[in-house]
Structure formats: structure tokens, C-alpha cells
Image 1 (cartoon, one colour):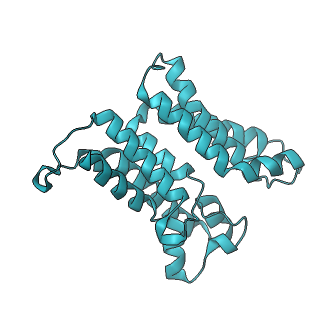
Image 2 (cartoon, rainbow, N blue to C red; image 1 turned 90 degrees about the horizontal axis):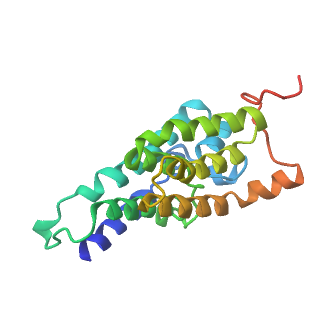
Length: 212
């Protein structure tokens, strides 16, 4: 189990490199003290501009892809860690660790983002064919509601839904998908409360029913 422990730790530390906070240090800002207070790409866009937000987005997605594809395949035999874990389960555990690292980053006082972009990167690595329907759900909900948080929750829920509809309900990925939905629901609890109170911010760029 040494291989498993080593790769979990590696992915957690990788996840702890939160794009907005790492780049924010170079710029001398902490976006957790700006805008919505979230350390994600959406708040980065609102407070720092599109170039900064795109850089954040690619960092957070990239580490998810690496954790789901590269890290599980690392050969640690020379270090006395021969492969002992099923490769699919290892990829899923590594994917979970990188998302948890993003939400609770060791490098940033355990106050990170909400996990959505990193989870998208993980999805690219684990099940790339599920990405188009998941993104379609996200875009549809944003267009109809204007709520980015709601769109994110629906998109994350769409992944296990996709697995069930495509008769992959017995896959370990379903367990992962449900667990990630619970985590993302928890990280978006503030958004849910604000939506129920009617105080949640709506993005006007994509929301079709907006008041003109």
C-alpha cells in the first residue's frame, strides 16, 4: 500500500497548488479577500480580468488531468513500491486527492477553491467522453438561470447521471461521481443559501431571460 499512500500524497500536494492563489501571490493580491471571496476562476475573472482567469482555469484543470492520468501510471518500482492497487481505483483515488487538495490546500491555509475546474480536469482524464454532455448541462443551466453555482452543481450531478444512462452504473466511477457531487454541494453551500434567499449574483453575459 506504499504506492497508494505516496501517490495520494503527491496528488493532494499537486491539488494544493491553487491557480488563483499561486498567481495572486505573484501579483500581490489574495482574491479570497476580493469579490465573492472564492479562490476560483469565476471570481478571478470578476476581480482580475480574463487573462488572469484563463491562466487560473488552465492551471486548475491541468492538475486534475495530471492526477487522473500521469500520477497513477508513475513507475515507483525502483523506490521499492511495486504496483499493488487496481489501476482504475488508483486513478479514482488520485483524482479524489487532487480535488480535496484544491479545496483544502496545504500551501494556502487549507482555504482553497470549490473544486469545479479541477474536477473538470479529472473528468478529462478519467472519462473524456462524458465531458460534452456535462458541459452541455452546465451551459444550459447558466443560460436559463444565470447562476454559475447552480450550473456547476447540475453539471457535477450530470456525471453520475450519464454513467447510469449509459449503463455504467456498476462502475467505480459512479461511486466517485456521487462522492464528488456531495463535496461540490458542500463547497457551494453558500451559493445555495443565497439562491434560496434571492441574493445570489447572476451572470448577465449568458443569461437569456435577463431584464434589458
